[in-house]
Image (cartoon, rainbow over all chains, first blue to last red):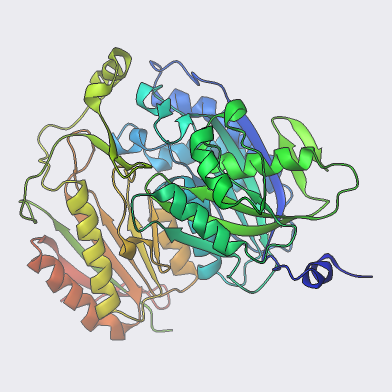
Length: 297
Length: 198
């Protein structure tokens, strides 16, 4: 019997080194909390959403699967830490009550929307024998600051949390690109980087961030001969690092009939020009949940 | 195994770069047409400003470098480590407010990892026996950013890296960092706690 990788080789496509074993997304409608309650109470409320999601994905880690780590990342969660309003160790303590042993050890926001890619690179680099990494992407406007509600490039903001379990199934790191724009036209540079990365893509579906149509139109034009996921900006807004992952969930939901393993290239761009592009397979038995709706498993 | 910890503590008490230390809170993003989209706190509405007014910000800690200068400093540090300690596998750094400006290429290199609180990761890298340097600064880069202007540098590596560590220490002092604690070398090969001092 031919394996899916054999099939991919027969089509001349690049094999992925990464497999998405589980993923769950939960949306937050603004305002998330009363801005006048304490930041500790805000994070307690947040932990009530994130914790069960983390625990449900964490429960799927195989007993013999060595973990590289579990990391929380964000674009918007920044001011509360830089203001000194709360410390990461306090957030960990709050999360521990809900997520238990799966509580993330580290918080990353330096790479903004592309943080997940830099995390995958680092955690498998420091621990090459590890098989799994779990990443939770959280974006919420904890103070309800108006400046975060909308931006020139990304348009309306969307909020939510995504937890995913990624398995390293190959030996090459060619399937993960962490780059950055050299100039000021970050959208074009990002689109061109995706174009180069997907030139041997076969049936691979390119999962892009959600942007307003005028911005997304530039990317779609550069990638016109690729299969790309639909722009979910009108529905979700720009949900920061979660965008390409929501997009994968939505795409699979429309492809349920007779689908096999699907191959994606997930892409995120930070407003400061950092980007991450990863080839990732989604097998038929992956556990996929979109706002409480089980897409798969 | 020969595994040592080298520790340095310092602080800034005066500007370490020439130029104006801006205290404007500026979000500067590159936009599609190359112009810069700039939003400042002046564009915040009454609600935003009311939230800010409820927060406590230390008044006695001076702002001695701005965001650009902070990134410049972090980039210089990475370049010093690459030059003086090429065998170090990982450069772990702390950054709490990343969104203001684009980080330089040095900060995006593969051996560099930047997170918000590096303490748990230090313990994990020690457990894995990695040769790494951990750098934490608490510089106040704006009056709305918490900080005490201290910095801490810890190298976990073989004893042979001592020379490189002290070269970086000299480099930091030359850049204008005041050493506040005598640099200490500690043998942690077998969980021992043997301080050698300098």
